[in-house]
Image (tube, rainbow, N blue to C red):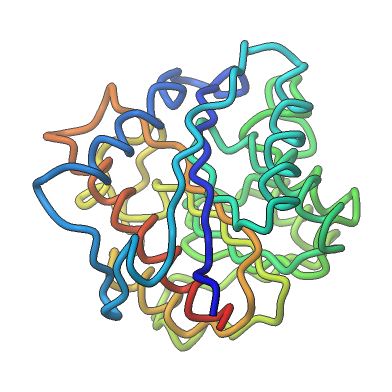
Length: 269
């Protein structure tokens, strides 16, 4: 049987960030943590990168912080999918998720999305920018690119975003009395989007918008482990190396990357 192949693609952009810039610096920081001799390439289920599945690093897309970046992202993701790979995207700010999902839906049809985040990112418009990193899921849902959106870790739901969630039928899993079993097991094709500020800042300090009271890494992994649908693509976004402490958040992002790949490889067999 052919080993599943993943394409690691960096998206060095934060032009749609609010408040703080810095996520454009994230892809090389995550790569350094991933390939560091500090650890190894084993995943928690026993699979190993290079032995059980292949991870090809395609480098960073040549983004220029211009509106044309969306087309470059769509083209890069489409090329990865056409090659039979599962693209794993390293942001960058969360605005990149919209063009990624556009390309994935063009190949697979509307997807189911499992989204980890402190923020719902459902603003119709944020600071005058419809492509803000606070708005990607509004753009995705209004374009009909997803049949179901489940959000986990949300703890900053204001009135506008609550109305947007109701408008689009978004399912937000409450964090009060949270257990991994409270997150539904979703049908495919499944897209995973992990904003690192969904995890508590005690574990993920290197983000622009830290919000106390978040998920633990173990809770995120438990939610992922329960998913059985084919994973068609995933992103890990919003690492800001400017605020990281001893590369802790970059190391966490690299671990999540390994575990997402292992999940996708398992579910593809």
